Length: 222
Image (cartoon, rainbow, N blue to C red; front, side, top):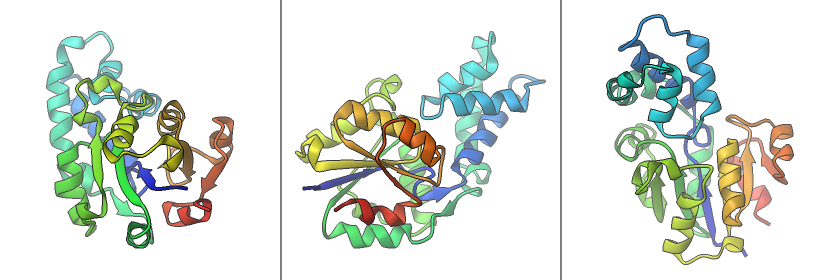
């Protein structure tokens, strides 16, 4: 019996996050180095999706590792601006779905987004109460930021804190990192098609449950 539903946030409840992150990576690296290929920056961000921002910035900057911290500082300022937040829109019926699920399941978030950005800026923008969730954990909360998705640490922290077995939980996400994190934790993954993965790509990763949006998740809860 399912007791806990863990969600990713970006591109699950909101659309536009990918474009927002791409814009912030470009702005951050452009602030320290001229002539960066925008296609190369986008490719790096896509390939390393879910990994720590410094890792993405290092890939974009190449040999200029001396500029990583300066670029990262500018990148984070951009995240808290309209360059990122202004690109976001809510997935239709997603918040109503949370309210419907809350009385029947524990709900949690496992995400790579900065926790202050999520809790103090993005959630209030769309009228989402933090009280809907029993736990919200970000890669930024981990002792070692390199242990974010696809490593199991985020999800295992939630399972332990909520005293729930892996077979009593599902993980809903849009990207390969979400799927691999779930599989590494022994949790059943569910893919929503509002982000990075297509249905075919999800199936190639071994995912059996694929839904159009998070608003359709009850169809796979049984």
